[in-house]
Amino acid sequence: MKKLFTLLFFAFTAIAASAQHPVLVTAQWLNEHKSDPNLVVLQVSFMKYEYDQTHIPGAQFLWPESLAPNSPYGSYNAPDIKKATEVVRGFGINNDSHIVIYYVRNELPAAARMFLTLEHFGLGGKVSMLNGGMDAWKKDGFATNAEVPAVKKGNVKLTAGNLLVDKEYVLKTLKSDNAKVVDARLQRFYDGEPTGNPRDGHIAGAGNIPYTELTDASNMLKADAELEKYFQPVASKDKELVAYCFIGQTASVVYLAGRELGYSMKLYDGSMQEWSRLENLPMETTKK
Image (tube, rainbow, N blue to C red; front, top):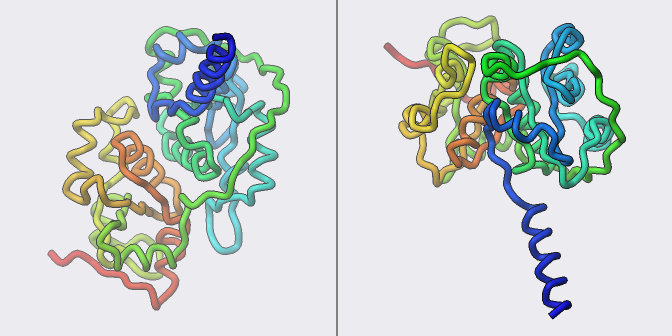
């Protein structure tokens, strides 16, 4: 009997460790779980001023460029796995950690890119987004402070991911019946309004899910039923969606929303910054 209990204990522990955390959490949920021993809370914002002034108690600051560096061939690239491991372990993240990301004001795209990057490196199901970010936390009346937590270096093991894809993958997707390329930019840019890129319009054959349509006035992702109205006309859930935008940032909001709805999602990292510069890659405009 003792052996049976031991086996059941380890089986339960394994199941608990592999549990998939929700894509979105509420401020109420985070307040109730803020003392969970495996919880790691990260504030994402373009600059650190807001974090220095006040933040969710226990939160650490994640600068977007630390996990999405620029290069001579484009903005917002995936870091190499060695660098990513160094950054992520610095937050005290272990293999059993539950990471909750939040954002300030309207900076959801940057936070969503960090969500995607962590999933790209094998942490899918271990990362959640605080829907509404800091504004939702304050609106619900929860406390903030300016204390910087002391953190012990983590031991998480990252794996090389396949969620950030290149132009060759996009070309292959355009020929597939099982996947769809999606432009996350505003419809007017999708249609062909000049943007300053070498070529205007969209990737030939791509659908359009404007990322700005997926959030409400409070910068929260809309309810699932509302999100479905944007996704269903583009592709069914049995198809993989490959999102892109200008530089690979705002399309991360489409990635996040798609994950919330249960779609298989990827992101074309080069986006229009790269695609529009390579004349051999197909583009088109929407005729009026």
